[in-house]
Length: 424
Image (tube, rainbow, N blue to C red; front, side):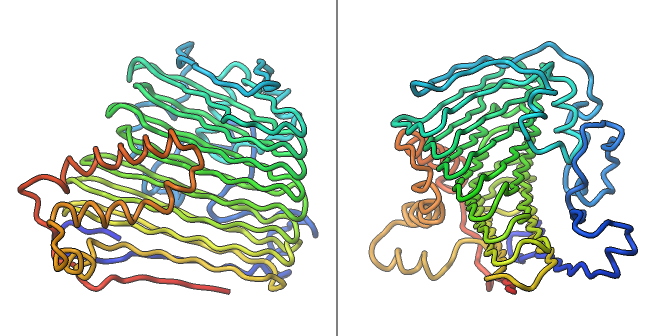
């Protein structure tokens, strides 16, 4: 959806459903039983030659303003680092391993140039080990902070969660830097893991991040990606299943201001039978040049019988001059599934909601506030960390004060919302 005029309210959605037949498999010379290649996710490879520098014409890069990456994709060496502050439950250990050792642990290989550059240039990986059967009463927190937007920092983190462990992992990013990182979550059988990744950078920061999650047999993972700060943030969440019975829930919350580019991409690879995934991302935009991108892709492979998946993206445009692109995709190899669907919608304030509140004595400013908080509340309360939920609520209030709570702000006249849903 692109809207440059205050009276325009459109929803842009493009979806693709691909059924890979045996003739197609033969034409591609892919051996029987091999994994097919998703059109939005190149094959994993640690070789940089397999991930050439993008030109901007590629499907996976066409929404990203490459000039604003400020040389990250050139892959120059750097010894700059972020400041670490950690809070670890008893029994959790932190150590340094080589890139090869991280690979041997079974992390998902890089399927894009930023992740491959991070592995190549980070000089090893930081391994955070959560022992089997640990039940964490307090969250595992890692605060990463940068000091200068001129610093180029490469990151490679690996979280290994033992079987039947229960833990909440919070990774926050603040300050300024040009940060490019890949983070792996290796979740053991029967484990229950909640992950929160918060991008709350200063206005001049650039962040390219990939969170790669391998869900163990009968394990459950909830991953929440939250982006408020930064000049340009591009996050990529990948999910794969190590066995049947795995469940993943991918949540996202973002709020783009004037000139900000916030991009969230995800790839759920149903490569095991009887697995589940649920995706819900919500975002708001305000100010001239605010741009958000959400690309959702779910691949259901031939072996993934009995799976269930659904992905949804909702965007709320608060002022004129914003652009929200939302592209859900389904790629399906087998019809033996429980269900698969997606939905995408973009709209302005709902006039009926505002009228209802105003007719009951609520001021216009307070009515806008209630509508916005209602839009985000169901996601914020799912974070599961009370202190972080309070922080997010306060951040939403701060963002609203920049435009929506201004005395001279006029709510655009709403038009009928165009929403699209598809199911299989």
